[in-house]
Image (cartoon, rainbow, N blue to C red; front, side):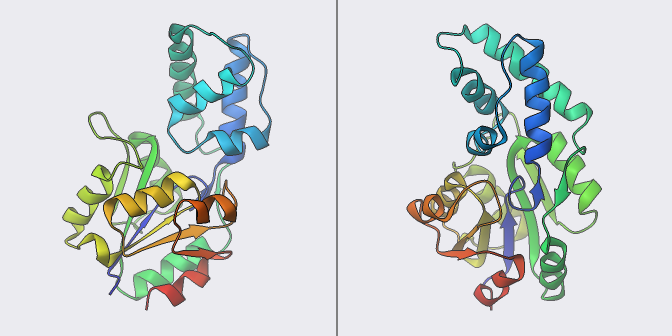
Length: 218
């Protein structure tokens, strides 16, 4: 029986692609790099801000010194955090799904590879009072797809991993679900990746609109 639902943030709950792409391109320009397209940004996200910056730079220039990568990463995080809400909104139907889950008595949590303070601010802004736990990237805790953070959430919520459903939009998310032993890993098709990637990384179910999730949680 599913008692709790864990959600990725970017590409699952919130459409953050415009915000990420614009902040990244503004930061790249300040450091003398070219902007990247939305489609490149779409496939570069998912493994944290540093990996996003690394992929963006590597896509246009080889052999860049790691000190430069670090400087761009630091500036990107600062620039994004200063204006994190611009160009961001919940996906259509997400609030309806969360409302239905709350009515069912589900415990709800967010687990993201985005920096923890930003994740908390975004959830407070767009989903105030909805989630029982909200965690982003924290020092000393491995990023997804490592099982560390979701297992911590399960412990704090008082549920076993197989009593949870995990929702995400990337292969990393489906790996996460498998790695911590989620009862079901649900791939969402409105996010940053396609059905082929989600299926290849072990999605147990694919949904094209949020309320379709309910049939998997009974």
